[in-house]
Amino acid sequence: MRLPASFRTTAARLSALYLLLFGICAIGLVFYMTALSVRMLTSQTQDTINEEVVGLANAYQRGGLPLLVRTIERRSRQPGANLYLIADANGRILSGNVESLEPGVLEVEGWTERPFSYQRYGDSSAERRIRSAADPDAPQVESETRHAAIALVLRLPNQMIVLVGRDLGEPERFRVVVRRSLVAALGVMAVGGLLIWFFVGRHALKRIDSVSEASRRIMGGDLTGRLPISGAGDEFDRLSENLNTMLARIADLNEGLKQVSDNIAHDLKTPLTRLRNRAEAALGKRDGGDYREALEATIAESDQLIRTFNAILMISRLEAGYSAEQTAKVDLTEVVRDVAELYEPTAEEMGVGLETDVRQGVEVDGNRELIAQSVSNIVDNAIKYSAGGNAAPKVTVRLEKLPGEVHLRVIDNGPGIPDDEDRKRATERFVRLEQSRSQPGSGLGLSLAKAVMKFHGGRLDLEPGNPGLSVLMSFPRKEDG
Image 1 (cartoon, rainbow, N blue to C red):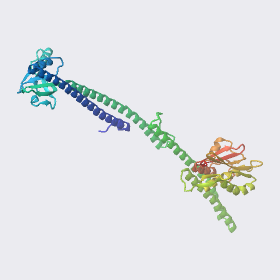
Image 2: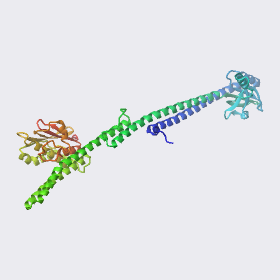
Image 3: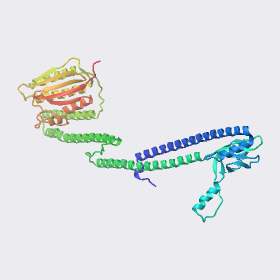
Image 4: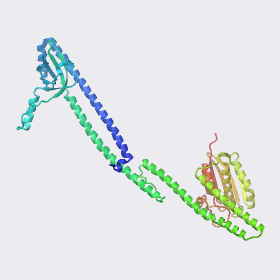
């Protein structure tokens, strides 16, 4: 037989385990306390009996057997009296308030080994009176009311037997009360535990069902769905928040993959078409010089495609957090000067002033080749897009060391990117804000720079230069010392 779903939840199992552990501890504690209390009452009873025996011994020493008998008779008639008995050497009861004893009690001198049963004088007649008052027509059947007691048995010099004992009714009543209380308390705990089990398990099951339903929708293709959060801040909410963060990351990666696929299909279609057209045109030419020119153009176009695919692979590898590139101390001052020296002829040819403002000995932890490639891409973009946009186009590369960071900034005075959304889109793959696309390039330069900065634990920010554009590369660094 299968249990209901609410009883198979973790919350229900924990509730059952806690209830079982608490029940075992409670039962053990109550039985221990009960036994301890009974032992204490028994010890007190024995002390009381010893005091009675001392008093009877004094009476026997003062007046012999007659005074002992009178003392026992007097004490046995008092309300709530202990058990007193005088018997002959054969065990026949001569005096006291005990009518009959369990066989064998008077045979052993000293404390009785265990509680024994006895009957007081008047118990049978009192019982008959109570039964007759309740049902006058009921047959009168002789019955005995037995009690339990402990006692000290003494043998006098004349071989007569004296028994002094005390009834155990009070400890027994205490034991019964404790047991009844225990049963009632355990019953209440069991009912409460089952109720908590049911409601907590049901609540947990509802939340798990809602998470399962949301998961099925997401697996069905709805990547915009998210796991529900109740706001309680418990483990279910923390798990849902982490999974929602993961789903948001997956959605971003899927969106980026879709954009890359669309951009590859759009941006690589043109160069591939040019390759085919040039190859087709070369087939119709007869001059060897024309063949060579067509092949050179084809090779140049192929090299550009290879560089584009290499950039795509590098960006994907860096964004995934994996790179076989080694990192070490990199002198950014030297990197900036090398890049400026490389692009100085190009800038001069295009009429763009290229200036550097760097400090000596600025170092960061990173990969020199990746950083140099990123700086080259940014400087190349700055030179291309500042030329022709101003009477005196100029590009400035500035390097400064700040507490905790190193800022490498490339500033141009061209048209810039006025719109904030366009500046955010400019770092995406294959995004080219120039609608005419008259400038050479594939739209991967800033994307690669952003991936490189992420790999180095830094960031790439595009800010308005007023006029122009300011591209900021922020590298983390350890404080000196």
